[in-house]
Length: 631
Image 1 (cartoon, rainbow, N blue to C red):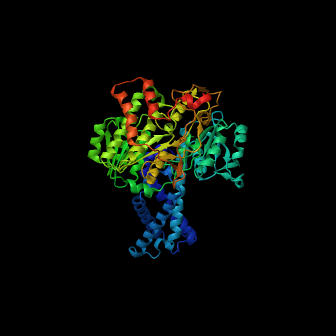
Image 2: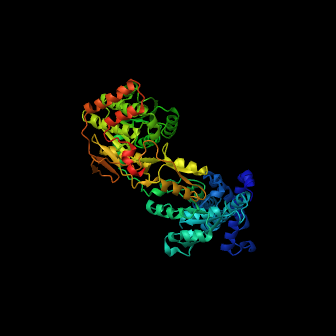
Image 3: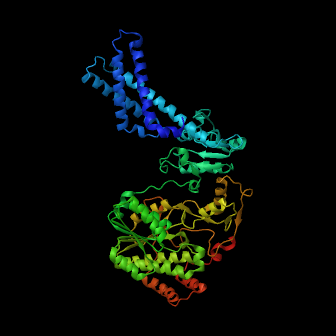
C-alpha cells in the first residue's frame, strides 16, 4: 500500500477494512458454529438475522472505534498494546449488538448466540488487516529510501541481546532496510550463545568483541544495553573503542524520551559513558526542607552551573527564584525554559553586576533572599592570567559585596561555588577563588548568616570545557590539541555536581568548605585519544594529537585538598568537609585593602597584582614551583 494513498483516503479505507472484517467474522463464525448454515436452509439462524446482525455490528463498531479514537492511530506505529485494545473493543461491541438484538429487536438468536466467538474472530481479522497495512506502509517507506548495495552497506555488531536490540533490529529490517548488514549480537550471558534475537544470532560475549570486529571488518557498533551499571558499561565501551568502529550508544532508561523507535535514541558515545560514575543518590526530603517556600537567589544564573542550579532548585518548589547574571542572552534562555515548565511559579531574571555594591544591596532590600547560591565568577584560567585586575574585581570584590549584603539583610545561608583550582593555586583565577573561600570562612564567625563553600573540579559540558573543544577539532579533521601529555583533571557531570551542591547544604552549620568526591583523575591525553577512537578514527593515521605546552598559570595535577586541611566524612559518600581555617574578618580586611588600593588607583600592572595576591593567599605559588620538573 502506498503511504500517500492511505494518508489521502484513510478516513474511508480504515472503516472499510473494519466492515470487511465484520462480514468475514460473522461468516466464519456462522460456518464454524452452525455447520455451514448458508448451505442449510433449515438452519436455526436465518440469512435475514445474519444480515441484520452484520448491519447492526458495523454501526456499533464504527461508533465504538470512533469514540475510542482508534481511527486517529498512526498505523505504522501500532504495537501489541494497540492490538489488545482492538480485541477488547471487539468484545465490547458484540456484547452491545447482542443486547440490542435481544432487548430491542427481540431476535431469537442474538448475535447467533456465540458473542465471544464472533467478537474474537472479528478482532483477530481486524488485527490481521492492520498488520498487513502496517507492513505494506513500512515496505513503502523502505522502498523510498536509499537503495543500499553490498558495497555501501555498513557491517554492524550489536552489544546486548535484550528488548532494545530486538526493537532496533526490527527497525533496521524495515524502515532502514539494507543500510546495515547485521553480523551478530554480543551478550555476556554465555548461556544465550547460539540463540537468536529477531533473527540475528548471539555470537559471543565482551571478550570476543575485538576478534569479531577484526574478522568481519565491523564498521559500526550499537551499544543497546540500558539496564547496566556504569562500571561495566565503561569496560565494554573501552573494548569497543579499540576496534576502530563507529560506536553508537542507547541512553539509559531515564534518558530515553518517547520516540518512533529506539533506533532514533541512539547517540554518539559521550565521555560521560567512560567515567564509570554511578548516579548520585540524594536525600531529597532534606534538600526540599531548605528550599521549599523560600526565596532563593542564584548568581551567575545564566552560566553552566547556574542554569542547572536553577533547574534543580525548581524541583523543590521555592517561593521565588531570582536568577542574576550580567549576560542577558543566556539568562533570557533559562528564564524562557523555566517559565514554560513552571508557569505558575515566581521566577525573576535580574540583569546586574555583582561588582556593583549598591545594586546588590538594593536587590537584597527588595527581595530579601533567604538562600543564596553564588556561582558568578570569571573562571577561564588563561584569560584571568592576562586580566588579573578583572578577576580581582569580579571574583573577590563581587563575592565580598554579596557576603556583606547577606549579613546586612539576614540571609539564612550563602553557598559559594568554588573550584579545585583554589587548592595550592598556580594562577590568578584559583587564587581569587581561594581568597573567596577565606572571606566566607572569616565572615561566618561574626554573622548570623551561615556561609559555606562547595569545592569541585571540572564539569563536563560547561562553557569552556575541553570536551566540546576536542569534538570540534575532531570534526574539523584535527589536530586535537593537548597542553601536556601528563596533565590530569577531575571530571564530573553538571547535573551530578549541582545535585551534590544541594545535598551539601543540608549538612551545613556555617564555615565549612565541602569537597566533592570527583572519582579518579582523568589524563587529558587519554581522554582525547578515547574521543578520537570512539569517533571511528585512528590516532596517527586519520588524526593527530598535538602537544602545545602548558598555558599560563596551568597546573599539571589539580588537587582537592590543601596540606593543612583535614577531611571529615558526612552521611553522603561523595561529600566531605574540610576543617575550618582560623581567619578573622580583620585579617581579611587587611588583605582586601591591599587589593582595593590597586583597583582604586587603576593599577593594571599584572606582576604587581599577582604579587599582592600572593601576599593575600599564602598557598598561591608560581606554576614552576608546583609543576617542578614535570613541565
